[in-house]
Amino acid sequence: MDTIFLMNNLWVMVCAVLVLLMQGGFILLEAGSTRMKNAGHIAGKTIFTVGIASIVFWAVGYGFIYGESNGFIGFSDFFFGDFTTMFDGLAGSVDFFFQLVFAAIALTIAFGGFAERAKLSAYLIFAVLFSAFVYPVVAHWIWGGGWLGGLGKQDFAGSTVVHLTGAMAALAATLILKPRLGKYNKDGSANDLAGHNQVYTALGVLVLWVGWFGFNAGSTFGVADAFFGYVALNTQLAAAAGAIGALLVAWAILGKADVPTMLNGALAGLVAITASCAFVAPWAAVIIGLIGGLIVFFSMKFFDKAKIDDPIFALSVHGVAGVWGTLSTGFFATPELAAMNGGLPGLFYGGGITQLGVQSIGVVASGIYAFVVSFIILLGMKAVMNGIRVTEEEEVIGLDLSEHGSYGYPESMPTHKEKTGA
Image 1 (cartoon, rainbow, N blue to C red):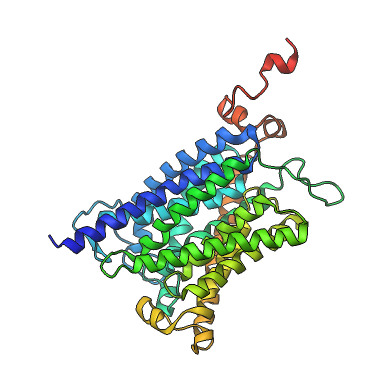
Image 2 (cartoon, rainbow, N blue to C red):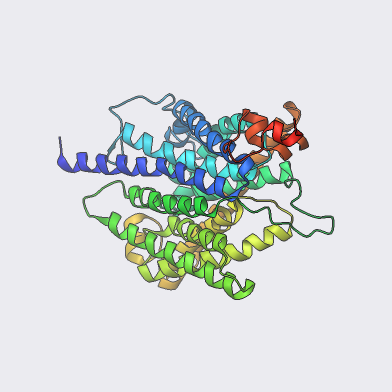
């Protein structure tokens, strides 16, 4: 068997494992960004929803993305199991696993809009429906032979497919679920329901940062020309610039070097470069990441003032930065890299507004589809399930106890006897 073929498959499989390990980063990030009474719930729901996403993706998701296309959705390769299949020069099973872990990441992003107030059963049902009917459709449009890919939409590793899709589902969820108890006062001012562990949050960001090299560099699907190193370089530069930009703007405006803002800036830089990492020069990667870090700060403030309660900042980090990252290739894509990876050069390289227009169409169409379908799904769930939000009493005592019967930090939480004085 050809050595390059084996090396390509090994490379992509290792990268897929890195992407799967990003779920550990999300566990730390989300648990650290929320309150102690919900930490065990957040960790547990992440594991079981990844399990659900895996089964659904195997059954129908992969087929809807990569099956025989009518431009809107695929219709073959369900219950995938053909080890003889070849795709992108890879064994079909390797490509399948790589695509599966991307789908699971999009679902985890979507659940940012559920944090600290949704029933566990709502996670379960939405995981099935999102993994079957939301993410696969957008992925098919761009990566699976659909109409946006046909227009030349550039999204190398998923600023739109993964991050914007997940963020729009999160927006639908947080609008339907309403803000957490105590988040907003009657005069409209917001209270800071601070996360319980910034060290967890920072470690989660670092785990995600490392996993992102599987996300972006793995999307080269090969090692022969070592182009994955170039993609990794752009990824690193954008993340670094995003962290610096967010810290400096927070420091300048708030008078304090706000740690959560800095961490979200690093993630925003990573999200922004995900679409363009294979299309732009390193200097542009720095600009893209820097702007991502700046806009995430203002976006976080905007959603808070609009009374849209987003505990994990999924809308800002994955949504707004995902939009910017998608549009950035329309400005910065070089002629050489565009020719190699698909699409046209950007505006700043004499390509005119054509590619920027295609990118804009992709953002609008994908964002609207993900939001509308997720909103309809959640409204239906709310009606059928007699609500998808826990009761006020359950929210006050925390989802660890109300949904699972035990605390994530049992030694740090008051016992029943301590609370009642018995």
